[in-house]
Amino acid sequence: TQVLELTPWLHEDHWLCGLDVITVMRRLYEKYFSLQKDIQQEIDAFIADKFDGTPVLGVHVRNDDKGSENVDLKEENARIPYMIERRLAQNRELRIYLMTDRDSVIKDYTSRYGARVFHTDSNRSSDQTAVTISDREDRSRFGVDVIKDPYAAAACTYFIGNGSSNI
Image (tube, rainbow, N blue to C red):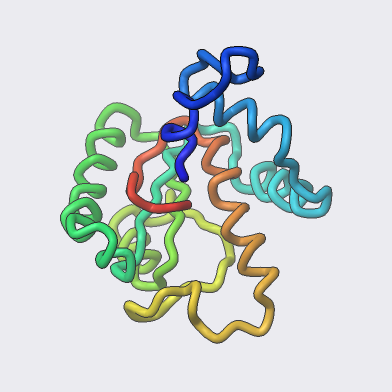
């Protein structure tokens, strides 16, 4: 069930009653969700190392495996470079923090945008197989990788990405 679907049912005495859905989600996260200290330190170290004070454009490109849930995914992915170019036209200093679950996307965006592209050292898929179902020895590492991207994306100056992605 989505938070949006639940908020109309909140009793008038409930601490979240009457708030917009974004505020409700923010307050729920603040109250109930906290990262383990070592994961937070890893994220903080990544941001300190890679975000060098210049503006950063966060870009999330989802693998085609999500296409069964979003029939427009290929078209959405194809529009992302156009949106990046529009941002770069406004600010040539932008660096690009690329979040993706596919190796070929890393190669494509690095060939397009060169050294301005950076990313985490996550395991990615080399084909259309979802990275979530690939054989992995360390499933907890996969969880940390999934958490790390959106937390680092929150440190970006701008963001472009697939709105249908659960991440």
